[in-house]
Image (cartoon, rainbow, N blue to C red; front, top):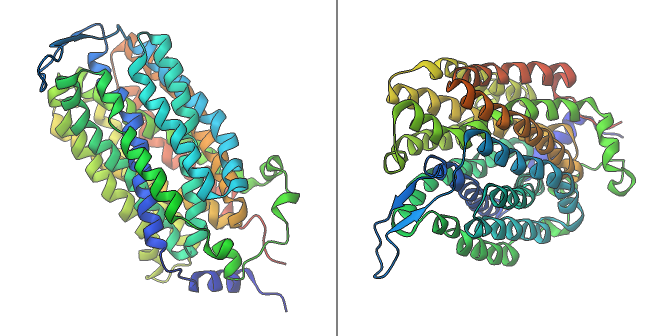
Length: 441
């Protein structure tokens, strides 16, 4: 007798593998390192404009001044575009690489690549040099989320995946918290170049930890252990054939429209606080830390939210969509941030929007494993990462040109306010009820 999709899903939900939360902790640490590396340049942006840093050296004989390069808003936007184009190109192969090599071997490879690229920023002397270093950083960092989502699909039952994703995704907030705490201090004492070197040792330790600790459960995915098997062997499905499914396009469009908002927060908020409220390098830390502390809790709460709705009697997928609608609505107030005169009111609205984005992100990532079997999740997530990176590659130069021409953040915050509602509408249109792409017969 053939089992229904709901019966199969229930069997998956009953599986709870010992050690899965240790895996989640490792994913959290990797994501934290990932976001520290990508945040360093944005923290330094206000001083990378031809200024001279007067250092406070802690070591005898250390230089007391350091010159920076002359970086305009348009040039900065183009550097960010180089990162995101590389991210899009890299993630095409990263998801497939992780699907073929597995998480244990594939994840350390991409982590090592992005860590070397991050350190390489300290060696450059020009806008072109930053563009090259940023391009290589994008290639490496493109593998983080496909690997992490695949590991989550292998180790966690469906009812826990959004929570697990929310927890490791909160590492993005932690990384964004650590960066404004550490980078200004390092830059003011040892120079801006030294700021790009701080995470190399942590990356090396993580790679050793992961290589020793991580194992695919019993050599199989959790879905296989629990009895959820696809009738379509992974080797028989070319990656591009997954694009025939409307579910993949719904996921991709959701990422295309909303990922640029998070990139905008990550890469341009230091500039926003500096230009709007005249906060210099030594005063940028507290507002940014508050925004990303709140975003970290938003990631965890947003990941838990579908379970909360299921306790009210909702089916899991309806609960997921309801959680996404809640997060989309909480971003809307950010539309007024471009005209604010109070730094703390701006911090409050940005904190709410960043938290809502992270809650949204935890759930939209999990829709990939809701709609596709675990063996295809890495590839489908890579599609979404490509779409999000391309959206960012378009949006970042637009930001640079708008700011250099108008000196106003208003249009950028208005887009941010409505992007999530539009994305949810498109997802629900293309994948009503998050219907599975490979339903059981």
